Length: 261
Image (cartoon, rainbow, N blue to C red; front, side):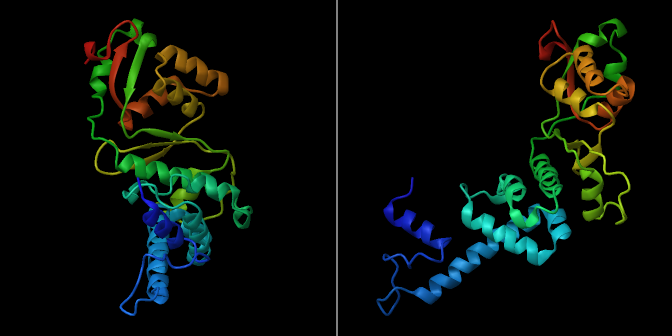
């Protein structure tokens, strides 16, 4: 816990309206206003740059100047709560959603949500994806009762906007082009090996995976997905889930996780 001096210093560091902390002195025995201003600016610039590295697609969409101005407001209102900056900006997407100058880009917050998920996936624990042969060897009559253990990096991001396409265009994955279909897209973010992957989910896929990740058995998860979309294809979604490496283990509802391969 910070003491009074540290609290005063931290508050002044991100608020240019506050005076130089009285505990700071220079060789002239007077408050080092110019030096503190330089330090204050460097801290803010450093945090803005940290956000730019975590949200490069968002920056490309709005441009460097707009992003820097938006991020600067966020940094001043939301200073880091931890010395570990790799997850700094988890609240940035909510800030973007309420940032009035960005109101003309209603999809921007969801793109930021996707990029935040990619960071978490990158730093998630290592785990070996399920061998597809294990699933094929199970008793077909018991498939409906199977539950899964999701990969530690797996995360679902849902949006009413085509965020996978927008992100891919602005992340250099595909070429920029007009988006004819502005239907919503849901994404599976996962890092089964060295690289983080972003996969657009088919109809009902997000509902299916959300139910599975929450512990529902396969049959119940499929029912949830069908309730959301009549076009849900169980075989295709299950193959996509295993193929993405988003599962580490399967087990039957009446068994413990460590009783299955």
